[in-house]
Amino acid sequence: MQNCRVLNCITGLSIGGAEHMLARFAHSLTNTRFEARVLSLMSPGPVGKILEGHGVQVDTLRMKATRPSVMAFGRLRPAVRGSGCDIVHGWMYHGNMAASIGARFDRRQPVVWSIHHSVDNVLDEKPLTRLVIRALACMSSSTAAISYCSRISADQHESLGFDPERRVIIPNGVDCDEFRPRAEARARLTAAFGIPAGRMIIGNVARGHPMKHHEGFVRTLARLHQDGYDVHGLIIGDGHQEGAARLMARALGIDDRLSTPGPRADIAELLPGLDVFLLSSAWGEAFPLSVAETMASGVPVVVTDVGDCAWLVGCSDLVAKPKDSDGQAAIIRRVLDLSAADRKALGMAGRTRVTENFSIKQYTERHVQLYETALAHSERRRSA
Picture 1 (cartoon, helix red, strand yellow):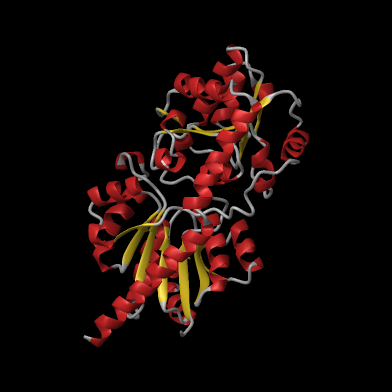
Picture 2 (cartoon, rainbow, N blue to C red):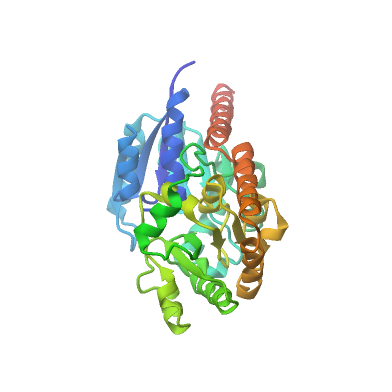
């Protein structure tokens, strides 16, 4: 069959779940008839280097984060047309809009959107984001498909006017060869961050953002410490050095029990060293990649009931209410009180769930099927 080129339009290529998902997906397409190219609206960040290292061509419109410019949008048409793409695939809200606008110039390529966000309350979003969501709802029926990484996200967006006939659910996928149990991870983790060897480590991987509710993470940590557990918190991601978590740790007197090292490139080598992973998010999650990666690493996870986290984990005993630090602490206590063998078994059950349902191989196969369907539908329309 003839090879096809897919232009992936994304807001930016800084560190983030959707950005990393795109990088792994683009690399995994090398074994298919689809070739990935990437168009970043903003100047590429660290994930751009990862893509280029995989041999994926990355272009940019060099938009500013503060506001889009007419000049930048003027570069959209030649960027899409010059890519020679057969499909335009948008990632996240602004990338979806750019994909549709860019493809409209040629009116030949099918457009696929990817939604990686949940909207519990649209009023929690920034004014510009609310405006973009409303515009996308009006444009949604012109797409070939809208790929949601969670079922709840699909329901939420359709309630905001997104075309339900375009719905396709494709959960995020994990490279289960990269994210796996590692015997040396514990020693590597404690040495990297100077954590006393005997402490039980509660981890989280996310940028500093109110929806992640990291002050709640610290409250949970403090509750465990108050109950006599020798625990240490580790939050990996940008924006924590003087963020909500750090300030809360100081206020609660446990500043020495929290490490916030910033972004790391060796996440896969560190996650297996955790005792428990806690997703403390209050809203905004759809299908958090960090949770799936931790499960693939063989570590027990505790999540809040946001997005499709409960479905991802597959065990209601590991799901707590958002903003309920006492409830989260109670679940973590039960996990920490397990014997080492039972805790390992719990973690390995999570890995099995990911390998069987949420692997990068399955993610790629589902997208290839989506692309084939979109191309066939487009061909029928042109022939009619």
